[in-house]
Length: 196
Image (cartoon, rainbow, N blue to C red; front, side):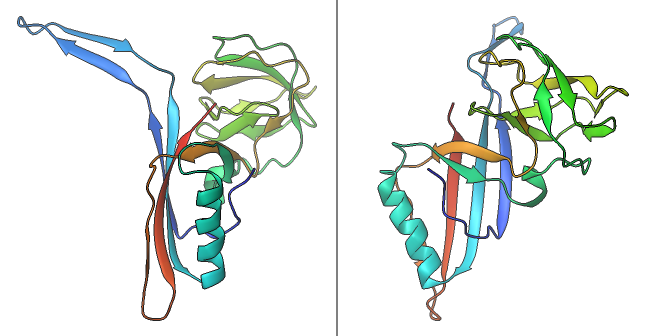
């Protein structure tokens, strides 16, 4: 299921890397990763028409607040690769859990992805960040560096989604509210947290 197509006035994307930090009396500090990285999205909607507000309102009810997950399209440049490449990118070999590089093949040799681009693997729900520019060789092959490391294995020939990327999420809060101004236009801020 997908979140209704309603223009987001302003979006903030956060990368949450849960780390437990403890300090001893002597000042020694210990740090440990306590969970996998997750993205959080704060979306602000302004001047929604009655129809747009009702679409979102009914969607929230259908999802039963934070109970169910869905895809929400990342707005503008957040959801599209910055290199301008619109061709197909696929994994060239199996990517195993814990690997932070994946062999890929693309439809031509060019700068394919840029550091900081967001991607998803077809059939998977986790969003990954590209950590190094990816330029394929003359044969259209290369090595994609991502973070976090793969949380599930990815089969060879899996298509990599790099344009129109969406976040698989749920509502972060169990209670959502909106305001309606005198002209009957609504303003709404929603928080989403990644689910995989």
